[in-house]
Length: 162
Image (cartoon, rainbow, N blue to C red; front, side, top):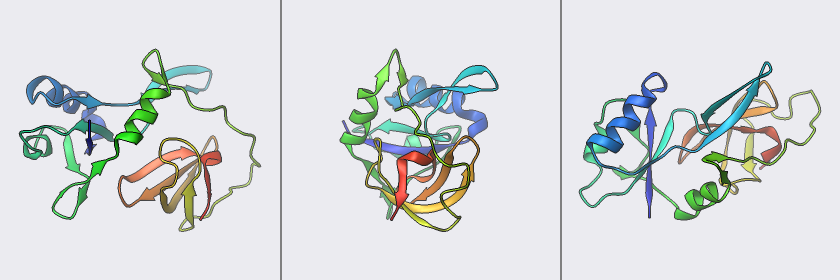
């Protein structure tokens, strides 16, 4: 099955997913991870503000104008198709409905990447993608701008200089 990538309003994620699944009858995939912060664990989307919507025969127009959907990631005038291999890789990493990420590698405390640097994703389902560093985040995470997905946040250990 092939997917589109929909950017959703972070404050309206539940509404967007509910509408796409229950009202518009699209299959929606939201990969989630368990995140530990300040001694507490919570479940959060792996790609905040993004969901994967299965390509449907009736087209993409209804998905684009669904409540909570900001836009579909486009390739020209039509939605960009996400490779089946990316979704399959994510689903293969799931255990009990949550993505299991590889353990973090120890990194030096100094930032590894400066804003504007070109980097290549070296590990995980998005490996091979090239993008620009937007910002370094706490807990050894880096925010990257990708042409196909927009802004994503990954572990700094999964990224190398391009």
